[in-house]
Image 1 (cartoon, one colour):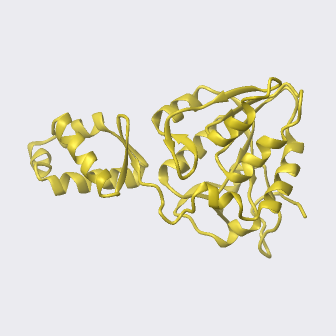
Image 2 (image 1 turned 135 degrees about the vertical axis):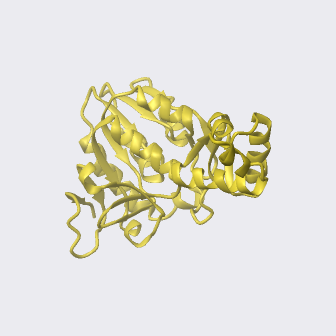
Length: 254
């Protein structure tokens, strides 16, 4: 880095503004990278991250920072009771696409939790998930090989995320991914935060096929981060779509 660039970041407000831009763009920033890029000490970076976290602008995690949780996203417990019947119907339809003897990945979400409850018995399945509720449901089942993906725990989503989660997912291979969404529209699938979106993208990248599960309300909701277009998805299992929707093959449940 040039001396001019280094001098720019001797000001704490300038440094913190630069850190926020990095988190907003990438969803995650490593503290070690900030030391190099900003030309300051590790202690300075640590103080900057602590201050930004205290102000609610980022979430400090081991080794760096991620985007703060979206305050507009309702907590998991609230979402779990919304459209409960529709979610159970969607889950029942979705599990029919599970092939015996294969590896299934469950994204974090209330509909994917319903899928976890309905996975067929004695089908020789391996299940990968970073969702703590899904892990709790599947852990007692001796007929399922469970791979729980850890990392930084997010209480709002009741799931794990962060660099450890992404690194672990990169080493895996999945036959069928059941992907949740904060919102849906004609162009694709959306998530609430950059880092949530990156976890979903990593799941898609290691899966041979992706099935999106979400109730019709998701088309009336909005979220800031586009996860993927419909071209990355095999089908959408839902209880309703807007008139004229042609983004992907739709499996409607009543």
